[in-house]
Length: 81
Image 1 (spheres, rainbow, N blue to C red):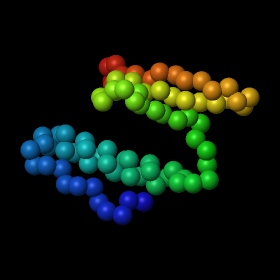
Image 2: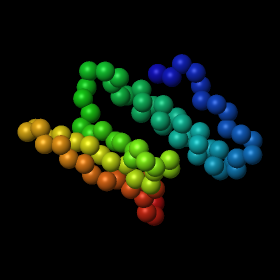
Image 3: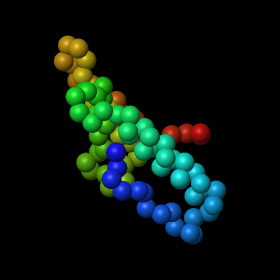
């Protein structure tokens, strides 16, 4: 659980966007509280390319039950919502 509240949203942000950001922050905090911090392994590790300052993609690193490591490119930003 975070020990401090999120920062205030600047007054220059459009009210519709500010409300969205408030709901997003609440959702993120709720979801993070549900996640165990230790004792449970993740199914994949996401990595950003080390040679890009603003990556347009991340890489998903996975290992199957026989120890085979695989990577999958995951584009950021996606298409239409």
